[in-house]
Image (cartoon, rainbow, N blue to C red; front, top):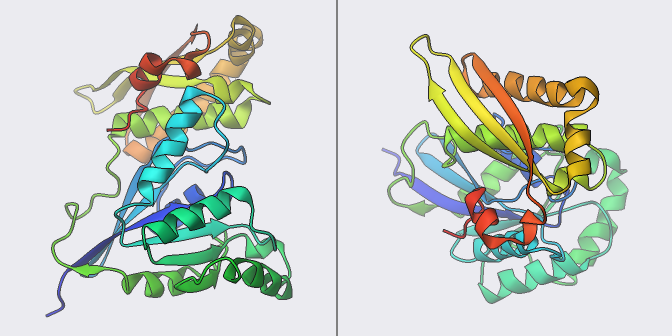
Length: 297
């Protein structure tokens, strides 16, 4: 009889390299929000995958960047904490033959923690295969990686090889999470993140980065419908007008897209009501940062 194995694997990299896309591809369903804007992920997201007797626990982390606000400091701290006490790490990079500052810092941290690290070159569907040799050469000059694997998280290319590699880092012992659990995030938190994703997708420039979402009500009715009341916080009165839009059109669009995704995630109808409020400079207010769910604990 096969023995149970489990392991924690951190997925780290600079913003926008595809960490959340990879997490969702490995889990087989959407648990991390994905946009083409940097710093989409703010919290560490724990994704759980059971494959036979093996349990893989992936830590999807914010992109490592230069922090400009207290929220930025929090996000960078989450990344740094996530590289310690894991069984292995995936350093996710783009197919560019240059090791940037974020990658160099992450390599140094992983070396200091003696964490076995797989270099995962993502987005290989965007370049010619021969261009990857220069990328591999640039990174292997910096660090001796446990393995190097080119993938396309979006296309699913290379993921079977990745599973095979990661199996070698699992430890014999009990599973860390109950069977069937795919994330440690409460459903309420996932739904708040879905709404924030739609803000990022629908709004331009800096505005979506200055938004936070708080679900003030999240309850199930007798008929199985989820009632959700959400407050969207932004930093300026002018931003509030843009989020609401002409005759409420933008807020309606954002809310409709969010509700549809929430219904897919929850597997039931969702009745969503949204409001927009201004909290100036909330990203530099620790109390507000904590109240919006960004906590080190």
